Amino acid sequence: MNKVIKARPCQLVIVRHGESARNAAKKGSTYFADEEARASVAGIPDHLIQLTPKGLAQARVTGVHLKQRFGTFDYAYTSGYARTDQTLSGLLEAYTAEERQKIRIRTNLFIRERDPGYTYDMTTAEAEAAFPYLKKYWEMFGGYFGAPPGGESLAKVSERVYLFLNMLFRDRVGQNILIVTHGGTIRCIRTLLEHWDYQRSTAWPRGESPKNCGVTVYQFDPGFGGHLVLQEYNTVYGRQATEPRQFTL
Image (cartoon, rainbow, N blue to C red; front, side, top):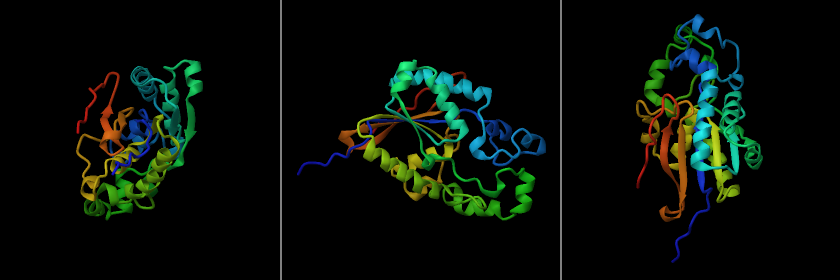
């Protein structure tokens, strides 16, 4: 009996957006440290948060390497958030005008960042006062099934990412695809494409969070059941460069 080969894009190159103004203000913390830290981005909704100058520089450097390694893409997708659109613009500066015209750019709301809920603009002290149960809640449910108050769990994000991936499987067979998105969304993409179970989905290893302009690559492998197979994860170019982490079967 002949083995059924699944149709897929030939390659997915996934890039997290460059450093954003909120990334810089929060310095890796869940909430703002204090009012001073929050001041520069207070009241700006998530979809309008801009890149910092450093974030735009990260995108430009990364774009040079993407062109050298992967050539011209057939389609480029962003979440439509300002920071992903700006990152894509920075990436594409490495390409000529003629090359950019060949890349069809699309916005897809299914790959937007998770809804952060009511604590979005809070300091640590405010969040702890308003939701004193949160620490125990997160310890109980973890970062995949847990949902911030009024917000969205990564399990729910995975539902819409699943729809996005199936659109790619249906409409972008054999094509070279660039996706510029968010850290939480990349975690969901990995969960789905790599068929993680619940235990793996909830255990995100320390130090492996998607980095600003980190590049993750999946390639179609007809010899592996027709799946998209992870080739490297979180490669960063520029001053904080890391060597590509190769994955072998």
